Figure 1 (cartoon, one colour):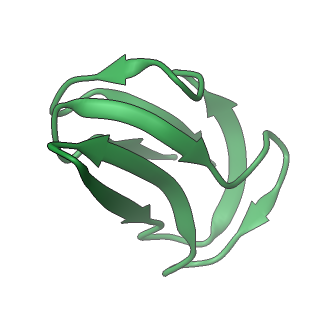
Figure 2 (spheres, rainbow, N blue to C red):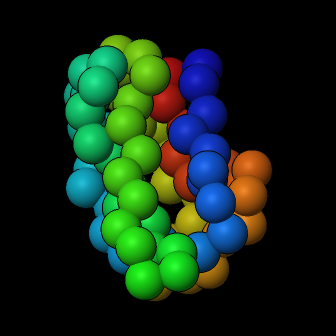
Length: 70
């Protein structure tokens, strides 16, 4: 199991995957907005998205878990 965490304080602008979706290492999963910048978060592992813990449009803090991959 791997956790995809927020790398900055900001807003979840777009979640590019759904629960149950197969993902690959290097795939863009989430786009965060912070200080007028778009910050992509990429998968570090292959796996299946098992949970989305914070929905699109919500605020996140550094270190918050956004997705869980199993």
